[in-house]
Length: 118
Ligand code: AMP
Image 1 (cartoon, helix red, strand yellow):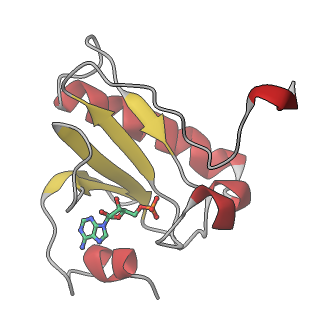
Image 2: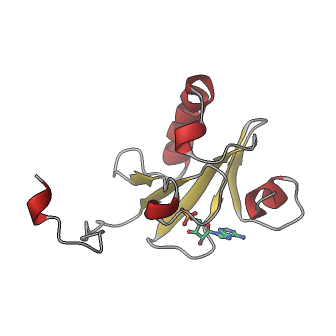
């Protein structure tokens, strides 16, 4: 069980934004942008690589709703999911980071020189 399951079950507190029977959106405890929301399925799914298309389809509609609720649907936002070891995924429960609320930077993300890869 991950901390996100504990949040879903109400065993840990969270600052909720939107919830329905299948998904939950809440504020990240360590925000990387003025608005930083985590969006998760209530079903235990390890990461994006193991989510099925049906759940992902429903999750997409939920993500759209969160964006509208946060006023980011017009101004824009970045959606990130860390998937597995190299990505730095810390919580092994599928989650999308929704980042916005200001103009975001696009920093170099790898610890290797990317120039020679293409
Ligand atoms: P990741 O590195 O993609 O697995 O992201 C995990 C995210 O969960 C990080 O951005 C953390 O700040 C966030 N996080 C960890 N614990 C909590 C919590 N109790 N409430 C809200 N966000 C959390």
